[in-house]
Image 1: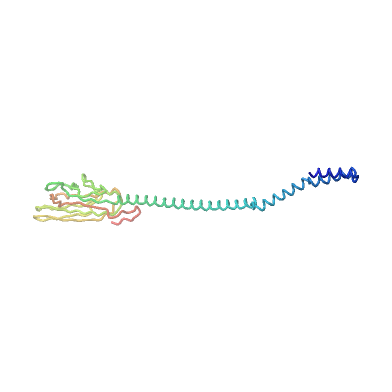
Image 2: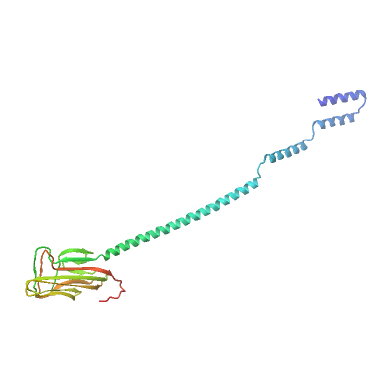
Length: 260
């Protein structure tokens, strides 16, 4: 429309004789410049306007966001390290507790075993059944107390009449000696072939009775038994007048000093 008006204006001027050809060209260029301004300036203005609009919208700075994210990751890593250290500490403590429990259990087992090894005691009577006399004999004989009342630890052998010490320790032994009808009744406790103590009684008639006891320090494997004297006689029945008993008082270490 603007060009049409310009064209009409130019024609009119030519008709009137007011404009030459150069002036007509300048007029058209001027009008065209007003109609189509330079595109470069327009694009710069639009770009500037777009940047301003983005800033006005409040879009965050990417570098600031990255810094914040890095700080968060670093903090999380630190927390993870602390958590890992705590877990490791708890695991170590638990392993230590388990080891203590295991050691305690082993100690208890060893203690129970040691206590079982210390459980040594026996007691036996001369006759298993009936009644009757033993002796006299022309030589000493080892008495076999066959009626076993107690034999904890099985250290006493009712077949041989011999007690064998299973470990070093202090042991208590005791015998009871009974006879009747005027024949002397005498028996002795022996340790490894050596006479230690004796029980002896003699009367012209009726019952004879005596007893004795001793504490002995025995090494493992030492033997203790009772022997009837030569020419002596015992009497026994279901009443168990003649008995042989012994038990461990307490164990001794290998380096303990033995005192007899």
